[in-house]
Length: 336
Image (cartoon, rainbow, N blue to C red; front, top):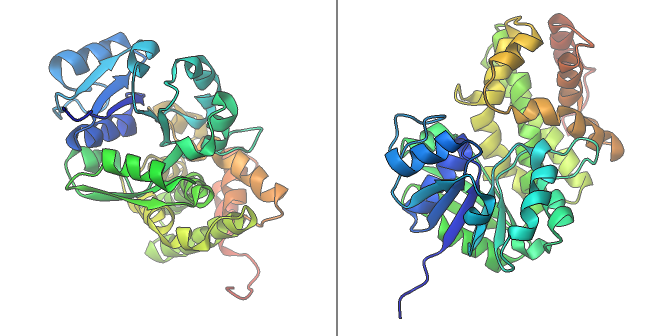
């Protein structure tokens, strides 16, 4: 009897969605990408390239594309969601009736919903009615460009159900992509959302000409900020020292490939906010989620000084000099 080949639908054809589709295909999982634009789907199907993001890289033939959500979702084992966090609710409401009854949903999204303060997995459960044991979160130091170039990477795959996490682990385990399972969905998701805000702060400091001592200070105190919020929300403290916590934080804060870091750098150089936004082609989740992260902190009575300063700067309540002073001139106190 022939063994069933796992199939995954990847919504959307952005950089991280494309990179994960490649990982899935390399692991032997057939991947169908849902693209919004006809020309992108057409190019993936005929030239095996994604001209919008990686025109120079040939994609595996096991990746196909469509603009039809019903065709993408027909009979799949996995639905991978890689869309901007703030568009998740509306899009998913349209797609929910098409999701196969036993498909596992995999969230790649690193943002907190504005208004509700909900993490992506909570929005998914609310909109689809799917139980938590079928919702998996994948996060880690995963810069899409490096993965597309075939460089090694690792990630945390979190789900309340160990079996669902293992199924996803198997579907995306390749010689160069090493996924680890984890049960702490809250910690993994929070790390992914808040690290983008910290990366904006590190980018701002670099753009202003500050050195590696400042970067290391912001990364370390940023991790303390993420951990405090995580503790208030019931996360496992070990998660923050792992791939989804420290691992992703280092990659996002230090790499020139990181869009949040780059956005921050441009701001730090004094480029006006509207110009930085206009020049940024891809979603910079930290900019959108900054406010919701701050609200989440306030709701749980957690002090988040770095997020506070970044939010004030993005909403043009303070200028760069004031932001730098606010970050570095806080009253001294015990580290722990």
